[in-house]
Image (spheres, rainbow, N blue to C red):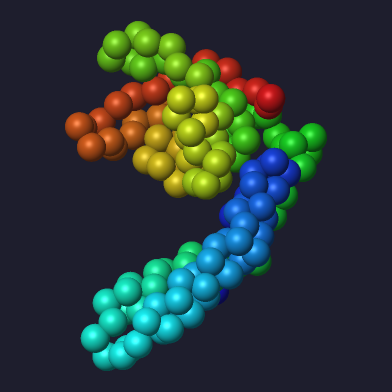
Length: 158
């Protein structure tokens, strides 16, 4: 059984659009490519046919993965979230204890993560380390280059 993943309404809408695009646009293209390759003759020595079949298999895996993700996806009602601790969709202002740098991140589902816009995955090392912490807590997080200590300055919702 897959674990439940939480999304914003916007994030879930993007996943559904991607799935629809794969099913309605990419799947027919893959079928057409296989038909065209089949028409070129002997299938035992037809590299184009083999490539088209492999591409179709990859596409079907991608569709199945998205369908599975959507089947376990839940929309988060932001108005009911607790601001006293870090949860999914929390916007957290942090202070790096060693450098003094102030950072601001919003914790989101993995598929919505985008570091450029300050959205980090709750499944990332930093995201996991922050979950459940409160203002004033210091999260000690193992990252690839060692350990960082992040003090939670504030928790809010967008």
